[in-house]
Image: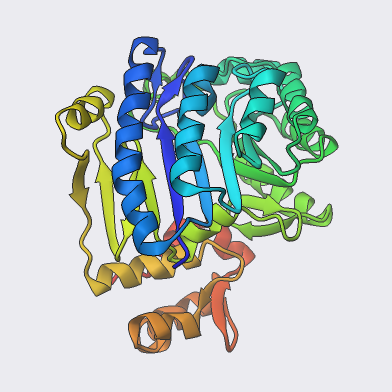
Length: 377
């Protein structure tokens, strides 16, 4: 069976102003205990999966900032991953500039990582300061060059748009700079102001100067038109890749492939069920110390829930929702379940259909969440 692994490292040097992920700025005193607890969970749950299903095809280490761990701590984690999971075809580690040097990157490559996802966000120093990032544009460029020298041939860069103080010219400069650095993959995310973040507080107080909605929409249009013109394939709503270099791990999320989530707040999708680890760092560590696993909840494993999720996750991709795979999975024709909604969304110009699949149109991709909601039963 094809499956993947996600490993969550919840530490950062400093939490960004827009971030509502399960992560902690500082907390150096908890990192060793976390590595130990993660090791126990990996041995118990990871070995069970390998015995049942063989080695995973992909492994993705995210956060937080995985490279906020010391080199020694990261070495412990990487050795554990290799001993339990072997050498996955794609092993990605998220890296933030300002947290790694050439030695750290060389060690990551030596220990088995073969793909990096680098959190650049912008190549404008003023924008980076507003976001609360710890790095400069120059440090981002240096990290990318050092990664190449360390032997990484598959690099992904994260960029953001709709940011405070960001203009179209600033965005264009960042996109063009990213292309000059020749990555294989680019992920582009629009800013979402989430409750509980510094940006949310500033917005409530009238202090967050975001670009006008029309400007943010123009930024979206620019990127989704410019990158394909330059040979980048948009294979998912937020992701562009050179042909053949799409993220195998990310694609598995949208193609109903099982995965094991390890670490605080990590999610798993196993045997048709969604499982979640406790999010609180100290609770995660103490639960494992007490001899228990940190699993705390599971979503409704009903066929209806599976069908809904199968549909709207597939629609995030350029290939869209495959009719044959839907019927093989659920024993039902796609149109017998969603026919009326598909017809209406096609008439509205949000979906397109052929004999094999349905997929978002350019207009539909702009309002993806609105389209996905139509597939809730």
